[in-house]
Length: 255
Image 1 (cartoon, rainbow, N blue to C red):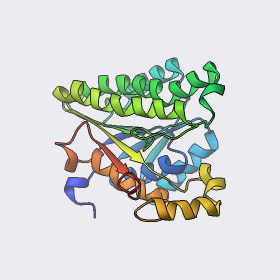
Image 2 (image 1 turned 90 degrees about the horizontal axis):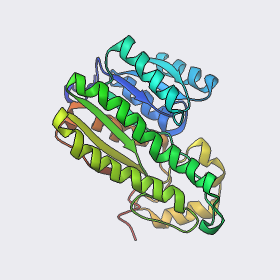
Image 3 (image 1 turned 90 degrees about the vertical axis):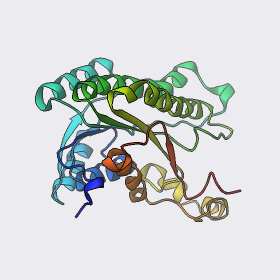
Image 4 (image 1 turned 60 degrees about the vertical axis):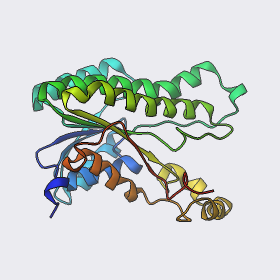
């Protein structure tokens, strides 16, 4: 049984990119805590599988198929959420795109695509969600940032800039939306063994490097991201806003 302070019973949540990887684990955890989850993604089959995995364990979820960079589609979706449910209690901005490339070789259209996906789309979603939350007098926005926000490495300039911007946006919206009872926080993942990282996870040299570089000495299991998100979404975090919580096995603390 979920302790009352961590219960999400009766809450409506939207998780972008909730059909796989970290997003799917976040979706499952929110549903397990009692939330009804709208699972966003672009792939119809992945969304249906995600919904099935939630309902199979007694959770409640529905698919919300759209590209978050499509402003018209996002506006239409929020209009439908407003009409059907009346409000949105929790927004998880989880979708991310990464393309590692030498800064001098990055074409502007590719750079814009990454910034649009990792930052501008999140701004738009926060704006739409906040309008619903303000009417309800409360709400929780959790942005999935990255440890690439506060630190950087060569060959990753655009992603780092976008995630750093998302981290700054989190603080700015916390300052602006607090008066309406809305908290805005971020969760910054470190190295997680997701499907999209399968080839890197299989690299033994990287495993040896992570063993030395992180305090816990290993890759993160995708399930290990979920607790931080549920915490920020729950009443237990009612007086916490504008914070970024690194879930990184001690990467940022270790040298």
